[in-house]
Image (cartoon, rainbow, N blue to C red; front, side, top):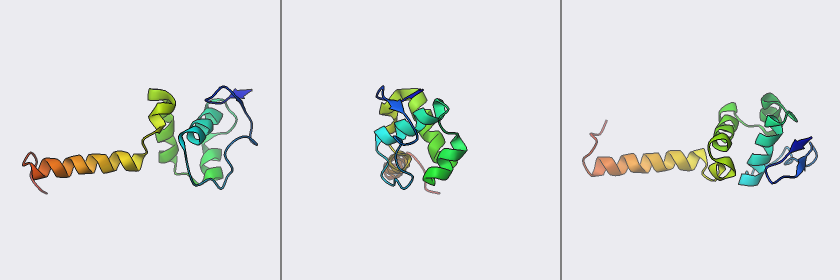
Amino acid sequence: MVIGPLGEPLTLESLPPPNTTRWVVRRKAEVVAAVNGGLLTIDEVCERYGLPLEEFASWQRAVDRSGMQGLRVTRIQHYRDLYERFERAQELGFLAPF
């Protein structure tokens, strides 16, 4: 039996539907738990949900590092924040423009 992030049993039927497009923290955590528990393979998850391997791997790393809390910031938000900090550093003269 595979246990989900909130302590509930996971089955293929209880996982997010294959056409999921809105990935809230709970859904990401359920899919990671399904892989970690052997319910699905990484390849099956990527195929089922149309996810790039890198995106799913980032979810796994986030869960490994910080649990469900680690899934709160998406990669897009992370890179946007980095870019904004980089631009601000250039404005302040800390970095030379390319």
